[in-house]
Amino acid sequence: MSNENAVPDALKAKHRAMWALGDYPDVATHVIHELGGELVRACGVGKGDRVLDVAAGSGNAAVPAALLGADVVASDLTPELLEVGRRLAETSGARLDWREADAEALPFADGEFDTVMSCVGVMFAPHHQQAADELVRVCRPGGTVGLINWTPEGFIGQMFAAMRPYAPPPPPGVQPPPLWGDPEHVHALLGDGVTDVDARRQRLRVDRFARPEEFRDYFKACYGPTIATYRFVSEDPERVAALDAALDDLASRHLADGVMEWEYLLVTAQRSA
Image 1 (cartoon, rainbow, N blue to C red):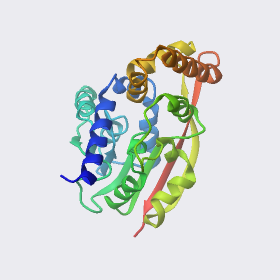
Image 2 (cartoon, rainbow, N blue to C red):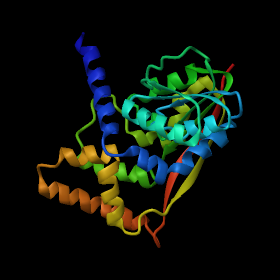
Image 3 (cartoon, helix red, strand yellow):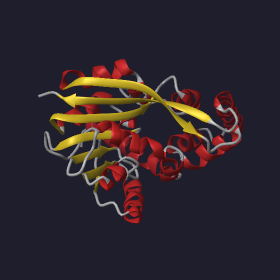
Image 4 (cartoon, one colour):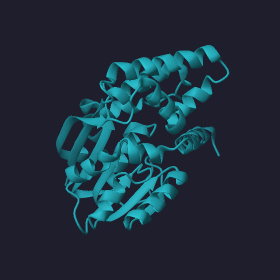
């Protein structure tokens, strides 16, 4: 194997391991659960539609689509998330396929799906243009590409900015995930491959955390990127304390009477003929 190929392989392995940390399915089920159904509705998914959920995690969008009668494939790089998704789908009575797959090299044919969607998932693929090209490629002409991504200006985008000084520097060519929440960036990524782009900023109401420390401790325990950042500074108590303070400060500025509002960008577009 050449060095050129070894670096991406190592990077993907690191991403896979990061998302297996903690309990992201709990985040998807109990904190951001409304986003999956919102994306499915925006995409107009219906019975019999062939749907691909990219970077599906435990199926936050894939399961609601399947419950509508769509023919759904949920794909993700991290098998541990897919395994949880299988169990959740069985509990809800949803029937769908689960496939381990890299968002930057999807193992599907050109134009195979009526709808290709991703709910705060594909935004974490390290190479944005490669992932965007794949979303468009596997969607049929006239089909729908739908995305929900955290915005740079919103709470989660600001959380990543707060963690950045404490996290390992990204490899060359890797772009920040919240850029996918910038309408101009998404327009540029999808390019001429789509038409009728509709990009809307919306807010998710989160009422799970009564105090800033509750948010911080929950994300330290459940959210892979936060866990990985803390592990990187774990040998330096002063930096751990500083990261604690940064997340507490961020949460305190967004928390009012036990409620936060997390901004996201909802994008739908039609695959060009």
